Length: 113
Image (cartoon, rainbow, N blue to C red; front, side):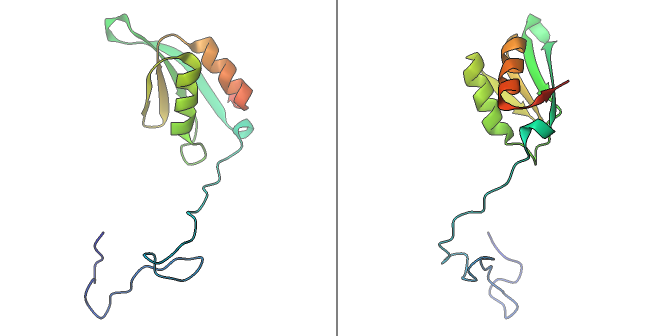
């Protein structure tokens, strides 16, 4: 990454906020991102029919900055034994796995609408 004033007298190399060393010399562990409690979030789960009569199970309504969506997607994929993807802030699981997804989200602690 290049800095705006790199190589000039105004160049200030980035430093670590914890130890104060240069970022290239810092040995601090990366900061842990705190996620919100699942019981305080409400998820909307439904199925949707796509072209060629394919069915997708959709999970919407979770805040991306309060939830590790990629980890949740992996958990749901392994629970259902199906593929899926993360499209913006919604999780898409291939196939009609409405009951399995609802049960898994409830067991994790999410509220369902």
